[in-house]
Image (tube, rainbow, N blue to C red):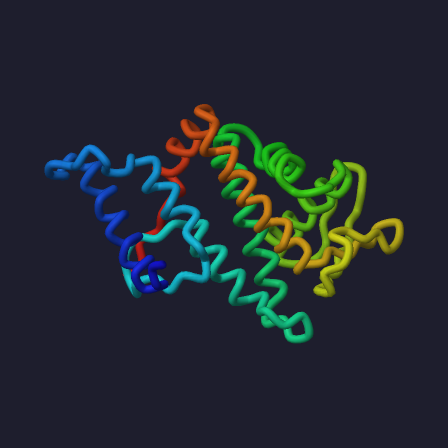
Length: 217
């Protein structure tokens, strides 16, 4: 079994191979060389617990998941930065929704569609509530949102309880640790669908060229 360092080195080398393939500078590639798509998937879905190189090009989803894990911490009694963790999860869901549905049209429908499709046991109302929390965090940097017909005042929990709990007419509590658990499960479900669906693969490759990687260093 390869070490974290060996995996990091392999993934860095994988991205360098992608660069050569995309620019046409690759030399002879053996017949068993993984496809460009496979390399892209490896980098995008890289395990966030991996210790990467200090500089280079990295998958955006990998970086988001790594930073969310750092913010949320492992001890439910000492969450490091739940507010930032929640923003990171919402941003990552937005990203995955683009990869799943494309970047045409409004963000709301594709965000809710991704949540309904890949989050476990979630209702339409709960998906709408998660989307409104996304709006509150990402657009207002707070815990208040307003739709066409409803006002939302949010609080954040971390007890791994109910994902969404309605506390009153316009008050909701969202458990960030439960949200994070559902988010991680959703990633695996989407990845599994991706590997067997040509339409999803085509969208993934279209979005990867725009949103797949970030260069650091």
